[in-house]
Image 1 (spheres, rainbow, N blue to C red):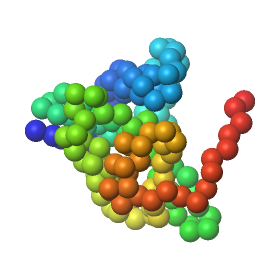
Image 2: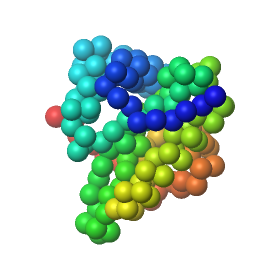
Image 3: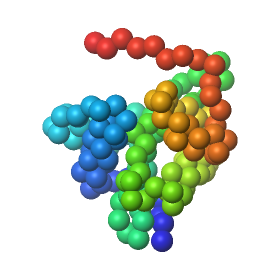
Length: 149
């Protein structure tokens, strides 16, 4: 049985481990334990930044995602950015991400000031791109640039 719920601070260890696994799998990056733990916990202390959702399979946390907010002055509403998406390999193909995404869409509709969803995905991650497209998302016309401080 699958259940999707808002994450609580007691889920922080799972979320941090999921983030480490995702970074290693997709980018071959090792995330520092202390830094990722404090980063995850900080979001729980700053709900104005966003929130996490957890997908459980038979009572076991099996996946998660994070939503952060971007104000759009063009639309006078928010975009919700979907980030830190991870489903443990043994639970993939069971609809966990679909359930997470559908719950996020439901919450956005209930909130009423969300104009859409955005996410970024590695250019080479074709399987994730296919999942997002099957759920109705489309590739955007924008490239992403960044400068780290």
